[in-house]
Length: 135
Image (tube, rainbow, N blue to C red; front, side, top):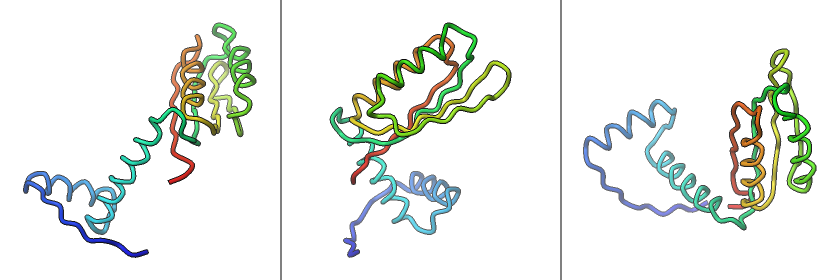
Protein backbone atom coordinates (compact mmCIF):
# COMPACT_ATOMS: atom_id res chain seq x y z
CA UNK A 1 0.00 0.00 0.00
CA UNK A 2 1.46 3.40 -0.90
CA UNK A 3 2.12 5.83 1.93
CA UNK A 4 2.37 9.59 2.13
CA UNK A 5 4.97 11.29 4.26
CA UNK A 6 3.92 14.03 6.64
CA UNK A 7 5.90 16.07 9.13
CA UNK A 8 5.02 16.24 12.80
CA UNK A 9 6.60 18.65 15.27
CA UNK A 10 7.03 17.79 18.96
CA UNK A 11 8.39 19.67 21.93
CA UNK A 12 11.56 17.81 23.05
CA UNK A 13 10.08 16.71 26.40
CA UNK A 14 6.92 15.36 24.74
CA UNK A 15 8.95 13.54 22.11
CA UNK A 16 11.14 11.97 24.79
CA UNK A 17 8.07 10.72 26.69
CA UNK A 18 6.59 9.41 23.43
CA UNK A 19 9.80 7.55 22.58
CA UNK A 20 9.84 5.92 26.05
CA UNK A 21 6.20 4.90 25.66
CA UNK A 22 6.56 3.39 22.20
CA UNK A 23 9.69 1.51 23.25
CA UNK A 24 7.77 -0.03 26.20
CA UNK A 25 4.96 -1.03 23.83
CA UNK A 26 7.40 -2.65 21.41
CA UNK A 27 7.14 -0.34 18.42
CA UNK A 28 10.19 -0.31 16.18
CA UNK A 29 9.52 3.20 14.87
CA UNK A 30 7.55 6.36 15.55
CA UNK A 31 5.57 6.15 12.32
CA UNK A 32 3.77 2.95 13.22
CA UNK A 33 3.01 4.23 16.72
CA UNK A 34 1.53 7.44 15.30
CA UNK A 35 -0.49 5.48 12.71
CA UNK A 36 -1.92 3.30 15.51
CA UNK A 37 -2.88 6.37 17.54
CA UNK A 38 -4.64 7.87 14.52
CA UNK A 39 -6.46 4.58 13.77
CA UNK A 40 -7.59 4.34 17.40
CA UNK A 41 -9.02 7.86 17.35
CA UNK A 42 -10.84 7.23 14.04
CA UNK A 43 -12.35 3.99 15.38
CA UNK A 44 -13.39 5.55 18.69
CA UNK A 45 -14.94 8.49 16.87
CA UNK A 46 -16.93 6.11 14.67
CA UNK A 47 -18.10 4.05 17.64
CA UNK A 48 -19.66 7.14 19.20
CA UNK A 49 -22.02 7.42 16.24
CA UNK A 50 -25.22 5.73 17.43
CA UNK A 51 -26.00 4.12 14.09
CA UNK A 52 -22.52 2.72 13.44
CA UNK A 53 -22.13 -1.06 13.32
CA UNK A 54 -19.92 -2.40 16.11
CA UNK A 55 -18.72 -5.76 17.36
CA UNK A 56 -17.18 -6.61 20.70
CA UNK A 57 -17.50 -8.23 24.08
CA UNK A 58 -19.27 -7.50 27.32
CA UNK A 59 -17.52 -9.14 30.25
CA UNK A 60 -19.31 -9.24 33.60
CA UNK A 61 -18.66 -10.62 37.06
CA UNK A 62 -21.72 -11.22 39.20
CA UNK A 63 -22.99 -12.94 42.34
CA UNK A 64 -25.70 -15.32 41.18
CA UNK A 65 -27.35 -15.33 44.65
CA UNK A 66 -28.20 -11.62 44.63
CA UNK A 67 -31.45 -10.18 43.35
CA UNK A 68 -32.50 -12.78 40.75
CA UNK A 69 -29.59 -11.56 38.63
CA UNK A 70 -29.41 -14.80 36.64
CA UNK A 71 -33.06 -14.61 35.56
CA UNK A 72 -32.81 -10.91 34.77
CA UNK A 73 -29.63 -11.45 32.78
CA UNK A 74 -31.27 -14.20 30.70
CA UNK A 75 -34.30 -11.96 30.11
CA UNK A 76 -32.08 -9.14 28.83
CA UNK A 77 -30.15 -11.52 26.59
CA UNK A 78 -33.38 -12.83 25.05
CA UNK A 79 -34.57 -9.26 24.50
CA UNK A 80 -31.31 -8.57 22.60
CA UNK A 81 -31.02 -11.94 20.82
CA UNK A 82 -30.45 -10.24 17.46
CA UNK A 83 -27.27 -8.58 18.73
CA UNK A 84 -25.87 -11.50 20.72
CA UNK A 85 -23.61 -13.85 18.78
CA UNK A 86 -22.25 -16.00 21.59
CA UNK A 87 -22.14 -16.22 25.39
CA UNK A 88 -19.97 -18.21 27.73
CA UNK A 89 -20.36 -18.72 31.44
CA UNK A 90 -17.66 -19.64 33.96
CA UNK A 91 -18.14 -20.51 37.62
CA UNK A 92 -15.44 -18.58 39.46
CA UNK A 93 -16.40 -19.89 42.92
CA UNK A 94 -19.53 -21.07 44.72
CA UNK A 95 -21.32 -17.70 44.23
CA UNK A 96 -19.40 -15.73 41.61
CA UNK A 97 -19.83 -16.10 37.87
CA UNK A 98 -17.97 -14.64 34.92
CA UNK A 99 -19.96 -14.21 31.74
CA UNK A 100 -18.68 -13.07 28.36
CA UNK A 101 -21.13 -11.95 25.70
CA UNK A 102 -19.95 -11.48 22.12
CA UNK A 103 -22.21 -8.83 20.68
CA UNK A 104 -22.71 -7.14 17.31
CA UNK A 105 -25.11 -4.46 16.15
CA UNK A 106 -25.88 -0.78 16.12
CA UNK A 107 -23.74 1.07 18.62
CA UNK A 108 -26.76 2.50 20.44
CA UNK A 109 -28.34 -0.95 20.99
CA UNK A 110 -25.06 -2.57 22.05
CA UNK A 111 -24.37 0.23 24.55
CA UNK A 112 -27.94 0.10 25.90
CA UNK A 113 -27.69 -3.66 26.45
CA UNK A 114 -24.37 -3.21 28.22
CA UNK A 115 -25.70 -0.45 30.48
CA UNK A 116 -28.79 -2.50 31.38
CA UNK A 117 -26.69 -5.54 32.28
CA UNK A 118 -24.15 -3.58 34.33
CA UNK A 119 -27.00 -1.91 36.26
CA UNK A 120 -28.45 -5.24 37.45
CA UNK A 121 -28.31 -5.84 41.19
CA UNK A 122 -25.68 -8.52 41.74
CA UNK A 123 -23.39 -7.45 38.91
CA UNK A 124 -20.10 -6.52 40.57
CA UNK A 125 -18.26 -5.33 37.47
CA UNK A 126 -18.84 -5.08 33.76
CA UNK A 127 -16.83 -3.82 30.84
CA UNK A 128 -17.85 -3.34 27.22
CA UNK A 129 -15.09 -3.40 24.60
CA UNK A 130 -16.15 -2.68 21.01
CA UNK A 131 -14.68 -1.83 17.67
CA UNK A 132 -16.16 -0.93 14.32
CA UNK A 133 -16.98 -3.73 11.89
CA UNK A 134 -15.73 -1.70 8.92
CA UNK A 135 -12.87 0.76 8.59
